[in-house]
Length: 132
Image 1: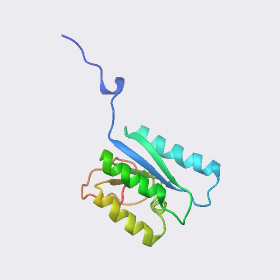
Image 2: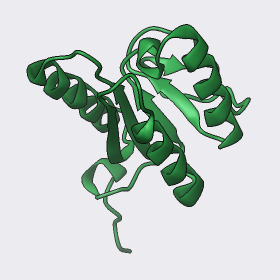
Image 3: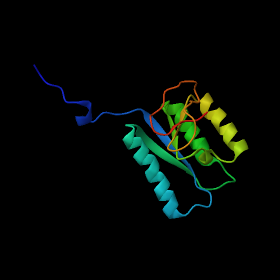
Image 4: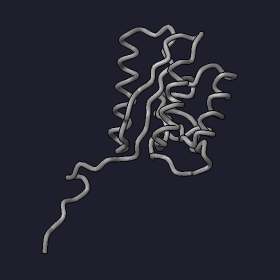
């Protein structure tokens, strides 16, 4: 009889996610800390982080458009953001949540928020949660 290794002892690929950061007026040190927060969250929850999209200018949304394109091509589990504010001001955030829901992506919050999902599913990693 061959004994199989425990999952914790194997290289197991978790669900694919993308990170998104809105970094308007944020220092380079803060940017690095926020990116590390997303990476750590993914590691702790066994998620595979494909890329982190960073929006540094409030007048353009090329990073968000790139994120949407990636979502449509790869069909990942969702996106990870540190807090709801990373989707932008209230009116912009509402539109972005709708667009992410249309793409079928969960929004996973590192901290804060409610435990609901954009695609209607109730499943989300334990810490943080998903936001609708």
